[in-house]
Length: 70
Image 1 (cartoon, one colour):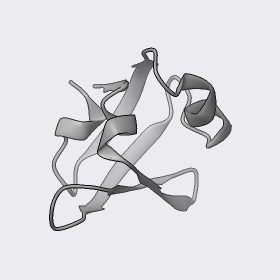
Image 2: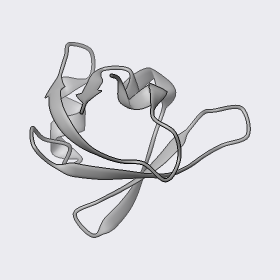
Image 3: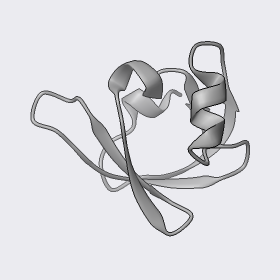
């Protein structure tokens, strides 16, 4: 499943990051094994707010589709 498909309130674990903005996502702290909580989505579904490592981060849906979670 991709992070872009996860519903708000869900807690997931990053399995891997595929292609695209991988280096950018890694510098933001999204790494293999990190636990993410999807806090909310904007009304049109973009961006997606996630909580990780004690801080909140907004991701574009385009970026979230490269993050595989379980």
